Image (cartoon, rainbow over all chains, first blue to last red; front, side, top):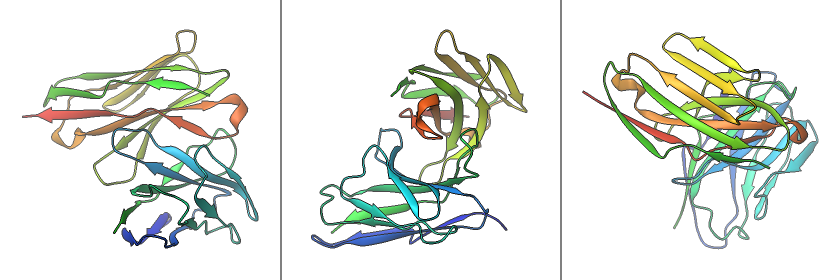
Length: 113
Length: 111
């Protein structure tokens, strides 16, 4: 089955710790995205990548980093510089043309201890 | 950028019809999406409008008026499983594929 997988489902972060959220897709999509969702707010774009080895900052990139070494994978690192990381993180992908629909993974809920 | 407004919550009875409105302001419109999101789950794609008019997909329809910066999602013959948040998202012509999301409308279906 084709789709987008995210792991883990729940993740706990200690103060001062970096954590990495995994996102993998087997849809052969060129473009991948990371969003953050907070209660009562819309999804906000953190980073996006249109092609392997290239990525761009979204609206709230501070405190986050990404890499895109493989077409299938777009991991997100939440660094210690992100002071309010508790949120639901969603990864999405699309074929890469601007008209295309984005499809979402199941999400990772990050909690701070 | 865009401002996207949609109501916070709507309640309707099973079997009824509900219309969720979405208004937006954008410098260069390039498409509007509706997604459904159940609590704690990923958003799932419902519909896409880029031209004015009504798109119908079974029990769900979506309407767009570009001149008014307005869309609605119409849910007919409501079922309990339709209780979810409905997200309106707009694509700006100048921002390559990026979507700006509204805060979502929580629809509660009662027996």
